[in-house]
Each structure stands twice: as structure tokens, then as C-alpha cells.
Image (cartoon, rainbow, N blue to C red; front, side):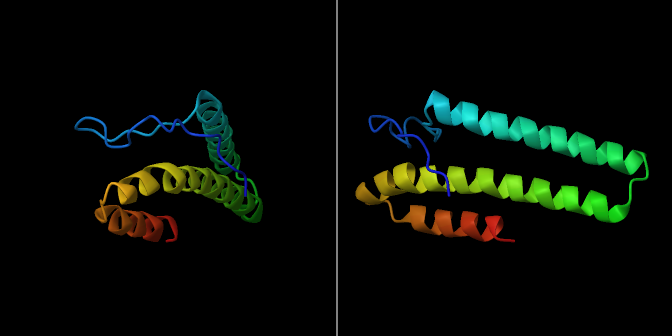
Length: 109
């Protein structure tokens, strides 16, 4: 598994009324680049279907997209756990555990 960049330890995950993430520019660029590739793969799959490409080939491309999305999710989850989750637990906010479990259940479906 790839590791995320160091996150800004001075940023508060709960700042203001809206929670935000605090990824470095390098991490954001990495995630955006991955998502751009995934977007291109999706367009490619659409084109394959329009061209009546053999179903097994399309299904293999779908599996590749799912794997790529899972990789993005793992990177985000790792960063979230190493920053916001730890911060909130240290602040005494135990609700973050239930939130994390719900999110992980959604990711694992």
C-alpha cells in the first residue's frame, strides 16, 4: 500500500462548522491524477460498449476501474485515520469510531 504525504498537523479536522480534509498539494495532485485516469478509463469503457467490444474485455476494464477506485479509497482512508480520526479521539470524540466503521462498511460492499 502506498503511503500518504505528511498532513499538516496544525490543521484542525473540525475547524468551523464544516469538517475539511487537510491533504498536502502533492497528495491532492496524486489523487486528482488517479481520478483523471479513472475518468478516462470510464470513457473508454463507454466507448467499448458503443463499439460492441467482447463482454469479457469490457468486464476486465470494469475490474481495473474498481481496483483503481479502491486504491484511491485506501489512500484517503489511510490519511483520514492518521490525521482526523486520531485528532478527534485525542479530543475525546468517540463518535468518530462509529463514523469510521460506517464508512468502512460502505467501502467494503
